[in-house]
Amino acid sequence: MPALVAPWKCRMLESIHLEGVGPAETMDLAFGPRLNLLTGDNGLGKTFALDIAWWALTRSWAGQPAAPRPGAISPTINYHAAGTVAAGGTGFHGVYKRSTQSWSNDWSNPLPSLGIYARIDGGFSIWDPARNYWPPRGDLGAPAEWDAPAAFNFTPSDVWNGLAPPGGRVLSNGLLRDWITWQFQKPELFATLTEVLAALSPHEDEILRPGKPVRSSLLDARDEPTLELAYGAVPLSLASAGMRRILALAYLLVWTWSEHRSASDILQQPPLNHLVLLIDEVEAHLHPQWQRRLLPALLDVMAKLNGAPAHPAIQIIATTHAPLILASVEPRFDPEVDRLITFVMRPEKRDVVAINEPWAKQGDAVNWLVSDVFGLKQARSREAERAIEAAEAYMGDEKSALPPDLRTKNEIDLELHRVLPGHDSFWPRWIVAHETVAP
Image (cartoon, rainbow, N blue to C red; front, side, top):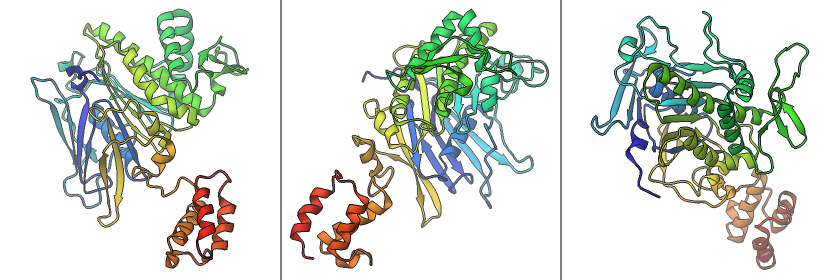
């Protein structure tokens, strides 16, 4: 892989250090400048880490603010982002103010990157330094009285129908309206959307292709976009949950870049080419075919969208429970710029630690399931795992390790026949052993 150019590392999130907040008294997260995959059991803090990363990027919360741990004396959030060569980097120290139940904001140290946060509930948050200003606004080219939003926080409904707060402003027209407008009035934008949809499609034989708009409801006068699927045109409102999430992601990728360039033109300043994408549970609602394609496709799509050189400044931080997601990035994963971070419970200390796992190809989803990352003993049912462990103990003459109901060779054999298919890879070992071990 060619050596990375400096712009890639200019404004990416490098590390977060937490004290008195989160699932441990202290926690450290170290990120790579390109792809970061966060794994671990439910409830160990993966989504919390994305929320903290979003706050570091935007100084706003996509949902509820992080709360300090009970009894924490000085809860703090520290982050470091790679900065310009001259500055040597950007650091920030945020302190929880109990009097206001909020986190301190030091507006002098922004992280000037575009940001997209795909939340697990189907909502999205967007951060654009050209439109989401931090005080003092007068120092950043905007009137001090201008009430710019801290970030664009879309509910699932807002993504589709638009974001229009009270006061007459329209922050976003929404996917349904923009899709139609782009299709008939902005061919370049629609061509980009079409290209992104094709790249993020689940399969070469199942490309997400826009169709002709249709009127689909007696009670809604709007024409609605459609997708041309193998069985006909489908209005977007009737698309599956998985398709709707990908449609929303594709739309907001194009919308974010487009709106940022428009805002930059108004401000007469060059647009950014740095983007941080946070995704909670990449695999949510997606068939394995789609799981296997999505992350590699996103890396390609994001590089094309910003029109940057060979090494654009793009960083992905994503959580996943899916071994196929990890298997899908094996050909792309570069330990120089990518990280695999596993959240692990430490029962003896009653806390959680985030471990940067050494990268090792596992080859397929089954091997990922039984790796240290996911920790299963067998990629089978719990009953099959128990029967195989009993068979292995029996073959190893470890009779004391046998469960009460699987003490004899015949009992184990009957249970193996009950829980394993005839083509299971364990059968050759057992068949040979069955003929040789004592009853």
